[in-house]
Length: 316
Image (cartoon, rainbow, N blue to C red; front, side, top):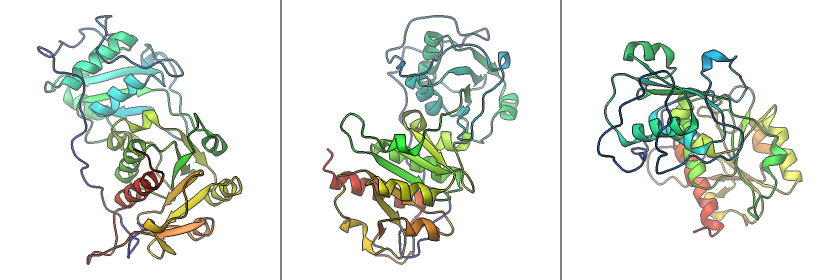
């Protein structure tokens, strides 16, 4: 990637541990709906949050699917689908589950949430579901939903509820697993916005949603035509733009004060930060490498940098 001695990380991110599951285990898994639409039933212990937009029924086959350059319209994986339903930020068209699946509390939550929100649930055999899936690790659960909405970066730089903006920008990250892992860490670290370039970078594909384990439902995104120009504009508005690169000017542990809007910029898996992006960074920082390996994976390097900002802001 960009922040260690070699600055060229790449490859797949680590497993990241088992995603947290759903609510408490019930006496037994609720039988799945016998029809295409989940019938109304008892509300689950954890209710969906009606934040913005509408969530409700209407199968995908009954309407023309909306698209966006950001993506996110197909969500795969149990935890990712559960968070889609819990967050309540987007209309969910349909949930499709495999007829060949193992018991899990998170599946009970998905069925309960679908009933509460009147979202159709459909069952498919494993082979048929495989033709619908766009990843190899869908865990027998797929949802279709309204795509994610891209904001203007100026909106991401606005102070909200007294919290200074804390953004993550990805300069040409192309591996879905890496971006998904970055998004998951970013959400956990309290990042308030994600900036992605329009070209030569992965957006929110089904593989990204699976790796992010639901984090995309709690993040705001901006897709920009030119990342260097967007960073220059952010700097003019007072943001501290921190790039990660092997040839950084300072250690990540010696950053300037971060009590203003902050943007952490990670580079691509192969080339690190682009030349123009690097020039737009107020600080280019490296992560100390004490062993023989010359670089860190981009998702790991990004995680270290994000939590260094969290530490320096004194967030507990």
